Image (cartoon, rainbow, N blue to C red):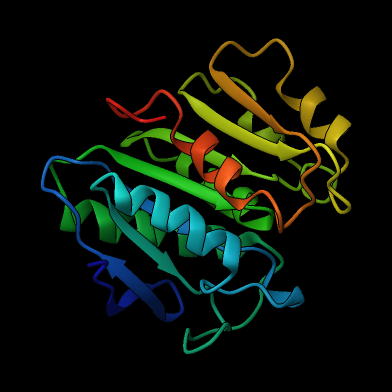
Length: 208
């Protein structure tokens, strides 16, 4: 049974509402960041749910949380700056909960911007995951020089983030494992399983 515990993560401007799934002791501890709060993004977003479930099914501990001003999280929208700080707080919380587990960061859409920014400045993070990263809406220049492994997933029919922009952003980067989901839109409505499979590909023994 999938167990989710309601938690409050200490954030820079107050408590952050979260859902935490404790996994196996040595398995990765994963933070998952949700899409744009100004456009209805929350930790209960369907893509975020599927991403979290994929990691949980592999024994990972998973924390998804609401950025400031979303749901019961304190604070208010801060143009992506404060949200990156929220993601840093979530990483810190997970690291304290699982000090001996690999620390991973995953994000969907805007969540990639906030999450990867937090991961970029945290050497404890050993793997990053970016699903439909909003490279046309947010500047990802902070990722220049990054060499840690990153899994990037994009739908070829994404109606919000042009597929060509994502493909160009990962070109010739040996540390990036890029997966194109044929025919998928931004929210992967008919391709959720393919997205989940791509997320885990090659990371777990016996993973499809």
